[in-house]
Picture (cartoon, rainbow, N blue to C red):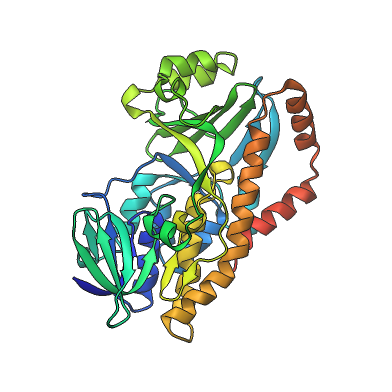
Length: 382
């Protein structure tokens, strides 16, 4: 099999990149490991910068129709008192639609509907690639023993990408120091309407209402990597662990089913200095995987696609456009990865004195400072 543009990975980064190429007049081929595609994860939030990027890609309305807009977001202490509170309606008036939530599967459905069936090949997990001696194109090798040739290669197969590892040998995932449980449950009886996180001594607990009376919740606990005790935690264990948190915490956990629970350690990718390698381009988590503390993982993948579309519709050949993409994305994605890692360390504090100091400082942050931070995050370069 041979194609002009191969996109490795059919997640958010791969599908939005494919949409960018299609909008620019190309016909890329997306190779996805799963068969059929089953998005891994639960709920996610899309901030104003991601909504702007979706608008640039021409799919904003299709995605927004599948999600839910929330009016506020709060960080609370374990007694339920606000540490910070953000009025999302006010933020939306200034920066565009913000605090939008959607189930990952619903987002994938919206993105997949933009990709012609003939441009998607499933059951193809990439394991290696080489430069062909004749013709100068690339051969991509898949786990099932097959391979394909491509003139250009967009690598969007996530933080564990084998191709990125070959291009940047030192780019290994790093453990953030805490582990995480997630689930999506029925919200009909709970009736939780707003999004919040609780930051306490035993870890964090957060909720994100979704469309169709669904609720996404998550919990994080400091632990050694791949901790044998925590990897086998049950819902009962979690309810006991967070027993001193507000009553709603235990009610939410108790309303869940064991089969809905997803567990994983939190990891990111130490920033790398290069995304473009001639006719090969890294995007999404393969380029700049981040911790979820800023809610920017999916947002940055969608931003990648918007910037890519901007370059694909400008002058020059694809190799030159890939290089310009890299120049525009390095500083911003490095900022997101580093800032998110710092926030995670602050949020996961366990010592009571440090927690009191942190909470007091956060409560004292002037609105002008918060506005500057939002401006840096939401004023994007498309």
